[in-house]
Image (cartoon, rainbow, N blue to C red):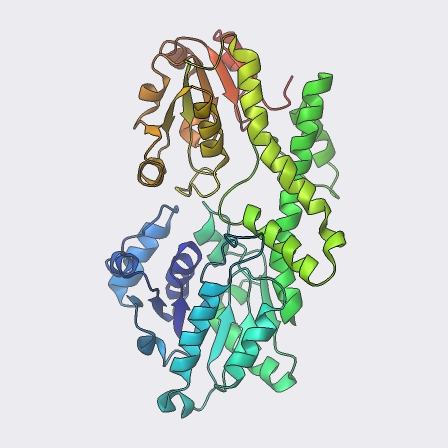
Length: 445
């Protein structure tokens, strides 16, 4: 059992801290947000993620997991995980590294204390944040002054599956120092942290700092490219009368392409993919390799275009001017099984049609309160029935299970006009058409 600290207790850090406790370690989570720390210390998750609330409550109650705002309380940890956010710069496309620099400066100051320097084994600092390539090498110099090692261990979490992805990952990547003795020690310490996972024969990939950093950013860029590709095909299908779902099924049978991330819709959002691909482009340009990633600008543009495409489809099929219409928007989170509304395509589309004079009623099973708090100008209702009542059109924009299981007949009795825009292509068109609905998908015949 190791004594582990997790610095930054947002989405990534809170999940990682609870899961490290589940793996048998003693864990201290640290964050500068006192209110968040108070909630976590009480065993309450400050955001929605399936399975986290139960795991967090157990870990805190068992004594394996505690939380603090004081760096001095984590000084004795054997391993320090960095899980702070790296948002997009307010004035550009690059990553804002201010928070990770503040965190590492504070940690380095703590590690400089004599009590830590007297320890027999050098502490290990492990980066999990998504950062521009070259960041790890820069931070390693900072920690070398404190006789601490640095490794980079990127995360590959999917919101809605984060606990599972941490406890049963499809790979574990170690980015290690170039000095052999330091790399050997860092690898041994990480092996001890992940002993239970490695015993399950989960693949371990050992590499250097820049490769480990690029594994995360290039993975996100590739997934974004697949999503935008099939969305571009969806618009072409609309123009030709082809069907994008059949197209995706056919090309997905090719194991060189694969079936995943080939469902057309209104595009990706959230706190990772959009800002990560922009930061990836910005860093490539800084390195003089910007032309190699120029295609990602088109990936980003296609994704943004999908949101306006949904508005255009609503205008095309409503059969009346948008101004004065009432539209029900089902879903506000950027994806199901999450309450995250950062860069949510659903909310972006809702805002666009509201600007055109539409009365928009939004509902979401988990994200409603976040919308009320962060976008108080939006009309948010608690139930699907309230959203549908008297609506001239229904936009399904986040594919929650309860929306996928909606009864077309029951829903039809509530609305004023049976027009459904399936922004996630997650419903069976014939079921809705048979119930008298005009069904509009993204690239579906």
